[in-house]
Image 1 (spheres, rainbow, N blue to C red):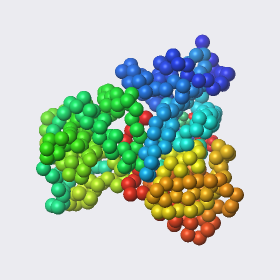
Image 2 (spheres, rainbow, N blue to C red; image 1 turned 135 degrees about the vertical axis):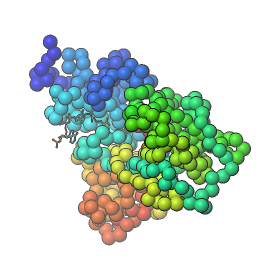
Image 3 (cartoon, rainbow, N blue to C red; image 1 turned 90 degrees about the vertical axis):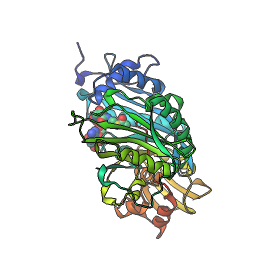
Image 4 (tube, rainbow, N blue to C red; image 1 turned 120 degrees about the vertical axis):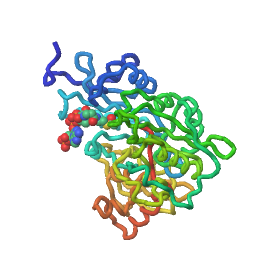
Length: 415
Ligand SMILES: CC(=O)SCCNC(=O)CCNC(=O)[C@H](O)C(C)(C)COP(=O)(O)OP(=O)(O)OC[C@H]1O[C@@H](n2cnc3c(N)ncnc32)[C@H](O)[C@@H]1OP(=O)(O)O
């Protein structure tokens, strides 16, 4: 007979090297999804058991947590990053502090292992601030009517073309392109080889009512692929073959603007399609290509959340748009060893950070530092909201300019 939750003995345990099955089943249940053997196989391909743990009762996981070893692009560099995932607590065990225990345990472990930054997608935006995670990569949901999206007459589509290809051909091109485009996009993650199967995994359970994923490449004037598009058509309400589909653009990128523009035209000009939607970066060029800017509606939401686990190493990993020399006073209730005053001397060529005893120019919580870290939100905005305290006049303006970057952060990888 199952143990009653209020009588269960709860002790954090690591996930054994073998036995991921029940762990994955518990996470699936935690997200109210049906267990699917193919999806579990795909998840196992990237699972790092030594980074997973939780609470088991009667040999079954009642709370789960884990992370992946990734590297994230930051302005002008990269930083080793724990991509946090699998966070669930079984309904019988909720709201008795298990998540808080798991978050504390995980953050202490990351600090010990020297991983300076943790990153996650929050299922609900109210959960993770209390653990020092700040919303760092604003995510924009684009949508509109395809027939309204004519481009400005001065948009150059170049002399290339777009053609549909199968998944394997697209994947080969994207693998090369991703490595080339990665350094230019703060917030983006590297993709160790096992991740490519996960990125191109297109199981029906992941389609959210849409049809199977389709793939297209942009070929430059000489026929070389230099851009790609992953899309699916939502078939909701369109059982008959007439017009009325929505094209969901899952990913679109190219090494130059002409390819980018032509890929969008391909998606927006699909016959029988009347609406488009898809996730994009805050600085998505599409909004500037259309003749009628109102034809592309953009709703901003929270994307990934950053948790700075080691202030000095995290700040040294990035570069700064302008020279900054500031002392930041950082509060960190969960990782007291991370709290303190740090002198940041940085600029376009690099940065150095030292712990100091001098008074801070700006005081902030580690959560706000996470929000600032990738340059997605200016410090002045947080200051206006009362979330930073300026002790030296002008310090917030300097922080805003220094932390800004030429590209907005964006993360295309869901984990
Ligand atoms: C990175 C990822 O994997 S994101 C996925 C997160 N998981 C899910 O959304 C799956 C469904 N939800 C769950 O499994 C659980 O509700 C969890 C994991 C979100 C929370 O687990 P619990 O063990 O109940 O959280 P715990 O008891 O430690 O609560 C800690 C605090 O967070 C608050 N909290 C917990 N969940 C939520 C929520 N969904 N929304 C707002 N606040 C929340 C609690 O009220 C509590 O607040 P307090 O410290 O002020 O008292």
